[in-house]
Amino acid sequence: MIIKNICCIGAGYVGGPTMTVIANKNPNVKITVVDLNHARINAWNDPDVNNIPIYEPGLSKLVENARGKNLFFSTDVDKAIHEAEMIFISVNTPTKTYGKGKGMAADLKYIELCARQIARIATSDKIVVEKSTLPVRTAQALKAILDHTGNGVKFQILSNPEFLAEGTAVQDLLSPDRVLIGGEQSEEGIEAIQALVDIYASWVPLERILRTNVWSSELSKLTANAFLAQRVSSINAISELCEATGADVDEVSKAIGMDSRIGPKFLKASVGFGGSCFQKDILNLVYIAKTYGLNEVADYWEQVIIMNDHQKGRFADKIVSTLYNTVSGKKIAFLGWAFKKDTNDTRESAAIYVADALLHEQAEITVYDPKVTAEQIYADLDYLNLRSPEENRKYVKVVNDPYEACKAAHAVAILTEWDEFKTYNWKKVYDAVIKPAFLFDGRSILNADQLSAIGFKYTGIGK
Ligand code: NAD
Ligand code: UGA
Image (tube, rainbow, N blue to C red):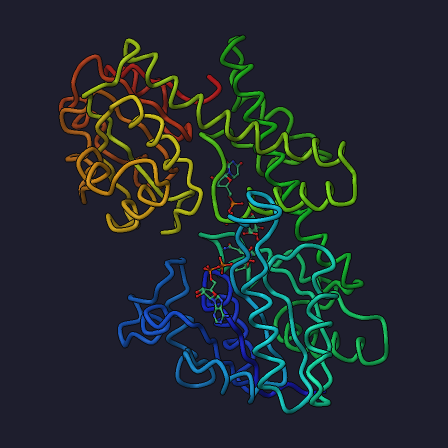
């Protein structure tokens, strides 16, 4: 089967970059990315390609190459569904905030709405691709909805989870470690899998395209994120032990990472992992395990989240205890708000929770982040629903200049590992802050010896 028209529902962090790369690599396939969010679609269509809604290194250039040729962004969901032979579902699957499974299970209402819309609109056979991260066996529910439309259209459902990381999305998409495609093991299923393989094979070597059954594919995505997050929580647990014993966590990471069985990646101790997916996907895994009565399995994975919450809280506690047990009325400068460098995404960022803990202690916070807007920072704080919007704006200031953020601060805290922080004139910062000059490096990116030589009281993670 040759695919000529693709529709992708959801123009977010996954749908936008993924379809941009597929469009660049398949100039003969027309790709329409649709979303209900008009502002987001308008931003994707902005004549100035620097205004696209997602910041990812290298993305704007690729959008410019394909947009208006074979890549389109639109709010006309029905039309795009109607035209496509293959439909990717790339909508958000957040943690449920109500009802059964509240705080744990994935909220599949957006997925179900997509399935019902596809069922309503489709008049020809379609391949429906799960791109969103979903609980294992979701494809069964999708199939049940799609197969009961009564209009005789045949659907094949594939699972094709996305493994890109934000900040390196383009690079990850252009050169993926693997592409995973799960499908039904029937003649039609195998044909559908092949159609998707052909799209990826335009640039991904065949040996990196893995074919599995649907359930393995769905579960592999949750498992990959759980393993990655577990490494971060594991090294963060060791960071606390390092602080108690005089070991240095970066030295420990290096020493264990050189063991080829362990490997060096994802062993950087930090103020805690953030991002839209690690926590939500582990909670989802825990919920699924509990649903099957596998309580030991659930407890095992839940510990990864418990450790991460502890790490965020412990960083805030350390600031308070170091500042003579009170930050009330003191200015704390935050460098960084994004959940990691090279992205403007702040979802579940550790900075939000550290800020909350310090506000609870009546601190005043000034934030500088190279890519996150003041509007987003206030939205994150308002979303906590713990203080009024007026209080958030009164006690948290957002500035466009890092030196201004640090001016007359009682402490400077690094929350995101932006490269630019390494090259600041730290002597200038030192001269501007209140002494003793406390610096809390939540990412251990600065040179402790050099900063101490300037006069800072430097505290890294796991040192
Ligand atoms: P996102 O919130 O950035 O984007 C989702 C988009 O879907 C939103 O713009 C929303 O308006 C749109 N949408 C929701 N329902 C819709 C509907 N019925 N019709 C049309 N549009 C609709 O989310 P994201 O970060 O792109 O994540 C999407 C999925 O991919 C999630 O399941 C996530 O777990 C998974 N994932 C995310 C990443 C990542 O780095 N962010 C990586 C891998 C996988
Ligand atoms: C993660 C996975 O890496 C992707 O493979 C996956 O597709 C994605 O989740 C998803 O499903 O959404 P992402 O969250 O974008 O990607 O970013 P990561 O690089 O994994 O970082 C996650 C968090 O862990 C960040 O806050 C980062 O600072 C932190 N981290 C990461 C550490 O604290 N230490 C490390 O060694 C690595």
